[in-house]
Length: 194
Image 1 (cartoon, rainbow, N blue to C red):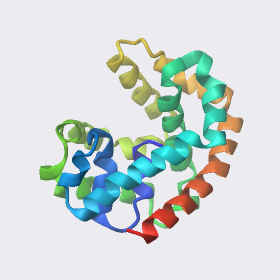
Image 2: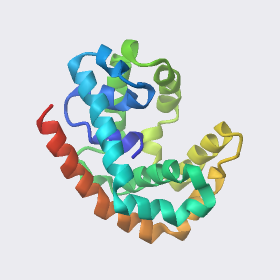
Image 3: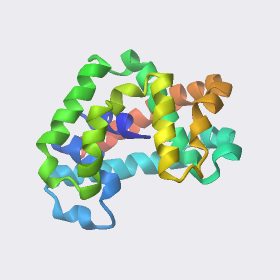
Image 4: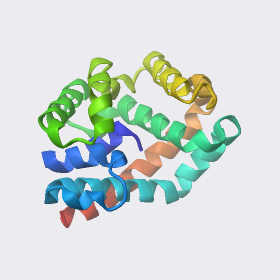
């Protein structure tokens, strides 16, 4: 899962959300230096990633596109799934995607001082380009994939990711719609202990 799903799955605790959103930039056991709720968010992120990476429907989705993206098929699938989450947003949240995105940006801004350097660097771009909200639009998704492909020196081939997604749209969307409620249930079990 990518940024949008991680944010939505964080629950109501703002520090858990901040920890979840910064977790990819927290390596090894350095999570232990943060406050307990931030730690919970970091560990929640890792559990979400572990559950996602091992899930048969996620593996099936990656297999559909592996010939195009090889090692990047997981990254592309994560973004596809954020697109489906954004497209079906009303099924998963009572607030609008715009309001939720702004809420996340405010939380990250309030926690800016503790964010790892990499997250501090990308946060202004995330907010200015409204990444969380842009997952819903195929046109904006093309820009996201172009930017990611550029960061790999155009070796990943992600510039074509929207066209490839459209070829498999029905299968990928069905996989997401079946998988995501299972992920939500897993996260609810984890959050009970937070």
